[in-house]
Length: 143
Image (tube, rainbow, N blue to C red; front, side, top):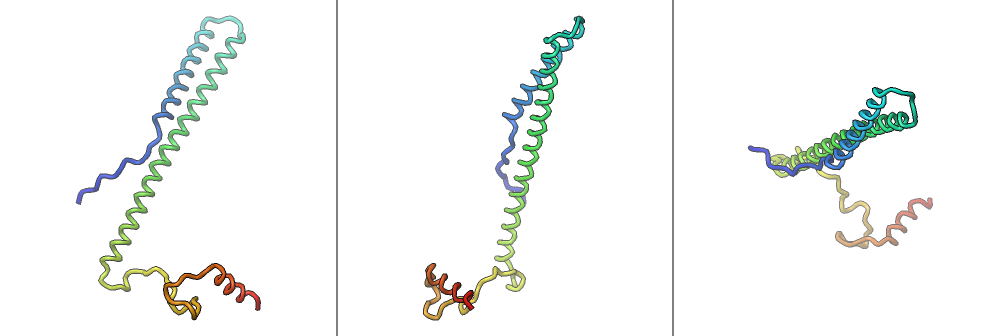
């Protein structure tokens, strides 16, 4: 049987990629500016310091934004896989419960028997008020 078409999971990237590329362009510009200043020679001035600071800062910003984008993309893929796994598990459990030949093969959900934890003056479908619950719980603790 063919795999059904599933919706594409959210994958962050367009905005993050824009900022990574923008930081890369600025870093390239600062590095070229610093290279030109170094080739022209002369004593180191404030312009050299600004070019070096800009080159280092934008390079680090680009690296950090790129790592963040990669982590987000990885987390989105893991989240999509986890959701797919949970859906598959729940569907298989549902199908196994419906297709079981012997009821002993399926683990039932725990349920309280009708005799336990019920007052004698209530019928099976009646609700318990908060006051009745409080009286019952308080009585057990006052020994």
